[in-house]
Image (cartoon, rainbow, N blue to C red; front, top):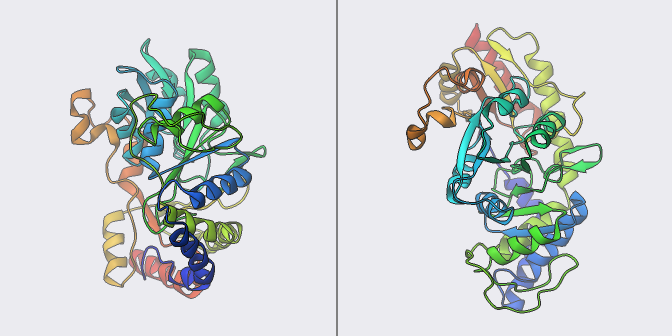
Length: 375
């Protein structure tokens, strides 16, 4: 049983994908073209963002967002100690310095109290990540950002479909990002990403940065006035074939989100009271909940993962080590024990298979193997 599979989805959507792909071939523009522009417009409608700028990966989206928001060399950005590496690495790539803060133990988002303690006179940005199935504590984090004069940006790469009070993830601060890595809730067949924002100037800057510093075409409701190079940029344009796939998959996104919720509820029911499973995500009762990953905390996590693998069930560890303890951040001087909640999560979390194609019979097999392990 793979950790992720979308063969049936592609079989069902292939006529629509083929039609969009043929339009790309007929048009003869394979990146930064009409399909990308259509996708940006559809994502703007779906998320409610004034501007959506397609780029070639979620990581590039973070780098360009930080650059466009005004990050200067040496500026500090508070990031979570427990997250995917791209959050911290994007700060470095954009010229800033990551400052790590611990997470809260329920939703794995940045702990506002830990953020407040990490702020220094050089801190200018706050970059929380929305992980697995729920938004970070945005009211608490926004309060810290306001108190210390920080710009709030969102690593909302996993958070498509997540909303609070009708507002989509990525739009609570100056801007956010989406990743369309194949395993994501809305996934391409390769790398792709986007920046979301309601700020016209920020969107224009990202638009230029993704295209070697040039304004190349219409984005949202403003039009490029020339193609001269206005600032040093990158080659981070989205491929139109990826946009073609995403346009097709976007038509069933809400159905896929609903199916993921059904599977998460089934896991919750079957693993209730299970000895050895220390914690499961609460299903329901959390506003904006969208299950990208179903994550449990388990005793003897690595042994459990090996047991499942021996029986053909793939799992993933999110994440094996806190970011501050990674070798590339040695110079920051952190030691084990500095981020106790993040370190505990790294020791116990395990992601189980969760994707729309997963059947209840397969899910039952996963749960039975977990029960057999702890027996």
